[in-house]
Amino acid sequence: MAENEIVLEAQVSRKVMAARLAAGLAQGLLLYWLYAAARDAVWPATAAYVMVPLLTVLLIWPMLLVSSLGHLAPRRAGYWLLAAAAVLLLFAQHDVWRGLHAHLLLPRWQYKAVWSPSVPLLFYSAVFFFIAHAMVLAGAHEGRRIASYNGYFETAWKLAIQLLFSVFFVGALFLVLWMGAELFMLVKLGFLRQLLRQAWFNVPVICMAFSCAMHVTDVRPAIVRGIRTLLLVLLSWILPVAVVLVSGFLCTLPFTGLTALWETRHATAVLLATASVLLVLTNAAFQNGAAVVALPLRVGARTAAILILPVVLVAIYALGLRVAQYGWSADRVMAAAFLLVALCYAGGYLWAAYQYDTWLQPLTTVNIYTALLVLAVLLALFTPLADPARIGVHSQMARLAKGKVAAADFDFHYLRYEGGRYGKAALEELAHATGPDAAALRAGAKAMLAQDEKDRGKPPARSTAPVSVAANLTVWPAGAQVPAGFLTQDWQATPDDQKPSCLSTREGKCDAFVLDADGDGRSDVLLLEKKQAFGARLYAAGGDGVWRTVATLSYRDAACAPLIDKLRQGEFTLATPRFKELRIGDRRVALTPEEPPRENCLK
Image (tube, rainbow, N blue to C red):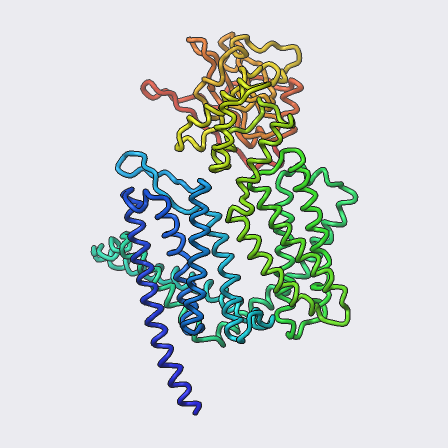
């Protein structure tokens, strides 16, 4: 009977492999068709409500199909795949509707809009369906809607390792193909190199190779289980190191305070990443709850389960400070959603840590139900229920209405390029504003609405009166006078994308050193931004009276605080260069001396 079962499994495996390879080939051909349409800027690439859903479905749905074959009964697989396609279409249509997915290409020397899904949509859709698919497979295997934790553990880790090694397999395959191409080039045969440069070849081969790798890892469960066990054991021994580091960090907070965290401007992201690392490493030690774990790892896992909560609470505090000062934005809404999930994990893990009669067994319940919460949160974020762009725009408009932000400082650029359709609707409302500061609001909104999509990366234009440059400068040496022409120049109209912010915004502040750097008897101005030492720029007036950048100070020297302090104190002289310049024809070429290694930035 066992032999018959093995033969039957082999026959089924061959049929499943053929179906998986066919699915991979179909995926590759369809993806190439979309690529060709985008390259030539033709339909469907120019039809947003067609291109975005098609590309989203073709990138994610075939992987669900390949993984389902051989594991789900045809009817169950059909229901699940139809439901998955419906959710993907919902996500993609909403992505188009909210208006944050356009990308500009330059085919045939003309700007034409071609459409693709936003990066967050693709990434978080992959996360959503990884969790959902693992839960569906585990439930189908056990014949229940909510499977056991061991079933989820086995299925999720198997799927993760399959995906990881499938990517590795595709990469290794193309390394071998490129090696073959270089071998043939040794004998002046370039056909394989040319073939590997063709999208019509690469895209289908990648998809088929990925499907093949998924099948090979699927029919070798013992190998996958061995790799998983080795990986988890290695990760679990990193846990004590992480626990020591996080404990040390938390112990320093009463002495350093939280001000330093606020000043970094990325504390929430770092703390969220720290909580995620503790979660992963704790689960690496816990595994399915039945593994034999060494005492140091048991202590480390229980300690880590306790540490997650204070880390998350500090992250919530950091995010709260940012929201209180600047209001909600799309990024902050996403961070708040992640913190909600992290807080559920943290509370559950703390509860599990204090159940001393078990080896963290309550983690099984916490992990299952928090995974369901993750699915609900992602579903809300990528549908109109809790669209981060909508919440961010409404928050910024409310701050403007309540006078928490002045019209001169309002971020029209955020509404235009990060607010999607909500931001554009808000700009259209502001374009007809009435009441105090109405002129500034109307001008700023109309200017941003008129801006072309390909100017997305340009800094926002200010709708206020010209910036008072003199108010933004701290002049050195004390008592020196900045030339009047420098202060009165219209820096907004000056074509210099690298000019310091103190010349174009009210918030920018600079140190201004007045000196005669070229010895022509006229004062020049060396500007150094106070907050961000990204180099210093020397300005001099030309024959037409326009001030322009004529030289720069290196980033390394501008970032050397002791060096800049001496510059402020006037402890400097203007010295002749060690090497003279070369005059070659009508051009002067400078020789840059080699510098020996420095003990510090002053020497």
